[in-house]
Length: 247
Image (cartoon, rainbow, N blue to C red; front, side, top):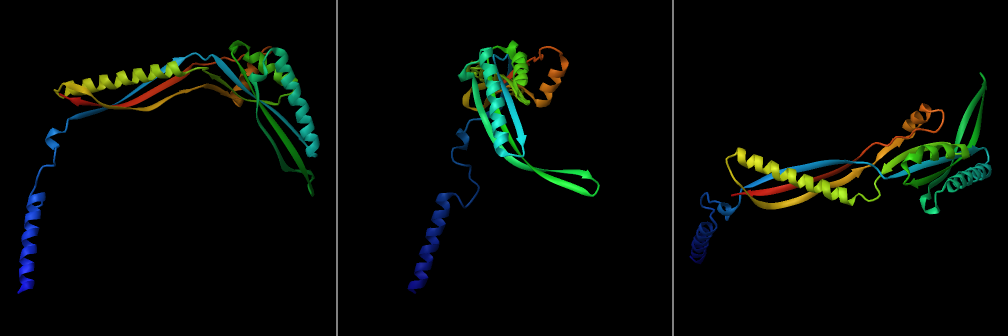
C-alpha cells in the first residue's frame, strides 16, 4: 500500500515539473521576442603606399674539402663585404648578420665510364642584411657587394619604417565599407538601420614589395653599369566584421 502511494505522489510531481518547464507543449524561447534583428557585414580596404626603406639580403658562400679553409675564406669575404658597405656609408646599426651555416655534402664525379670518385665538401654561408633609407642607391649597393665577394642576393625587400598610420587608415576605410554595406542591405529589405551592435578587427597588415633572387638576377642583367632596382608599391590591408541592429 505504501509503495502504491509513493508511486502516485512521484507521478504527480513529475506532471507539475513538466508544466512548469514547458515540456508539455511547444513554447517560445525565453526572451526571443526581445532579441534584436542583426545585419552582419564584412568590410575590407587596401591602401597603396610608396616604400621608404629597403633591406638587402646579401649571401657569402664558400666551399672547400677542408672545413677550416671554407670557414676562413668565408670570413675573409664577409669582412671584405662589410668593409665595402661601411666605406659606402652604412653604419653598424644598418648591417646585421642574419644567419651563418656550415654543412657537409658529398659530390660524385665520374671521370671515366668505369670510375666514379666521391669527394666531401664543406660549405659555409653567411647572410648579411643591409638596411638603407636611400632607395635610389640600392642598385649601387648590390653592385659593390658583389664586387667585394658576395655570391648572391637572396632578396631585396622594400618596406615601411612606420606603417601604423596607414594601418589605422585602412581599418577606418574597412569600417566605413562595412557600414555602407549594412545600410544597403537594410534599405533593400525595406528596413532602417539601427546602431552598431558589435565590431571586430579581422586583419591589419602590409605586404612589403620583395624582389627575390631570380628577379634580382633579371634586374642585374638589364644594365651594363649600375644595376637598376625599381621598387613597387606596398599594399596595406585592413578588414573588419561588424554587426548592426535594425530599428
